[in-house]
Image (cartoon, rainbow, N blue to C red; front, top):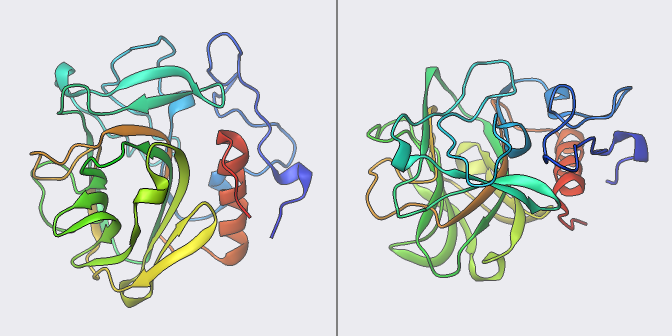
Length: 259
């Protein structure tokens, strides 16, 4: 389903800074869709509104725009990701793996039981093992994870919430920007990339108690080599209409082609 024109993202970004004007959300007033229009949003991270506008700035905290106070952070300067200004579609993004230990972490006040839906616009390096997200560093329970090229399944994009599924070959999506949509719902879990359903299966039934962006909770050799532009978390399974709205919003904003 395509959105009508007035429901699509209309950028209001300052061309010089790459930051959104006013609230920083980059939205046209008067009825335009924003991700918070969908209920049960628990986290909204947007690199165009991360509190920094200078190329190469370290990001100690990525502000949560959902209103829930779920801002992931890292107090160790060396382990903080950095801002890349105007890097994708003229907008700012976050870069990981600058020496191998970048992450941002948040433990939630209470775990979010499934179903949960995560959407992200991201880019990862060919042939490099990496976790887009997992539970927070050192927290090995109540996990939701998404990763690429991690043994025993090389060259595969995988979801995990107690078991590893669904999966899809990762090779076609390396070294380019894509829109990932991960629905965690036990045996009915679904992976979509660029608006197309690519995998279904049982990724486990664990709730989501925390999040660590950019690496696995074990913080060893599983740091993401790549970039994240935007990340959304909903404590629900999206309806077809909601999914269409938010995927079109992200695709228009970040220059992703979807059906």
